Length: 338
Image (cartoon, rainbow, N blue to C red; front, side, top):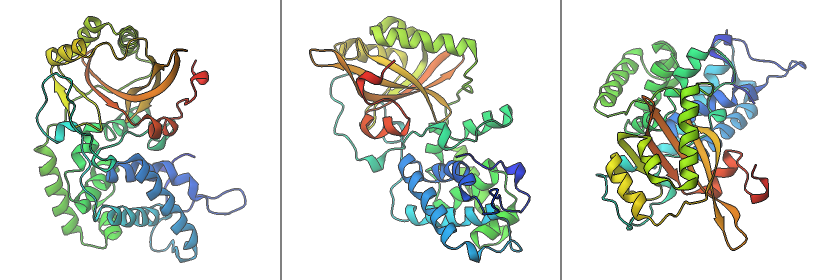
């Protein structure tokens, strides 16, 4: 299922050959919007599905004279997201929850799933193909750091900022969608921008699948990881790199602290296997660990990696492999590993 590019939206509804309106063409586009609003891959799936179901059931109420099908769908999606956020706590990364920890075995108690910003496959949020420069810009707005920053905004401010600054809607279009005035939208946007300026969003270079320097860096990372070669791993890290492991609020800051933690851990990831994927516009890997006397590999974690200046600046290891691997189409059965 593919997104309908904004440039194709001239006010008419997309049609199948039979003349029937094809709402599925909006699924990925709506996924990107709802994910930025909700910060949860699984809640995004629910919100998008509910949007399409409601639209299909009420299609006879759609009036093209009052706006495009796209804007009508976004109105439905926005109302669903606002309802979902009404009683929800802010989703966060470990770095948002407290100061960095010291290297050591005590990770603390795990936090519930609802506390965490969740990763999402690019295929669920970004259109296939299109202009490379536009795709690079869109990847930046689904980065974990950016989506985490959005969670600091009240829900309606969040919607305004995403629609205006990320999706480039006009102020009057957003006002109609939210049932408010242009002045109210402008004020909400100013407040949202001011809040984001107070949040430190670590820079990262765009991930390009065909970038040879990035490919070499990631290949070295995988080789060192699978051998548990700590010195090589550390040499690939930026001096201010961070490492975190949801669902634990424990996180480390700095190359030296990460080195101490890896050396003290007892080689738990030795002989692991990494299978590449992409999450939130960044390189990611499904991590498998050998289990039992027969050495079969079992899913263990999804690792999201961020890069800048030829080094690794951040690794986030999501330990919820049981939920995340199917979402990323990663093989669950050891025999399916390449």
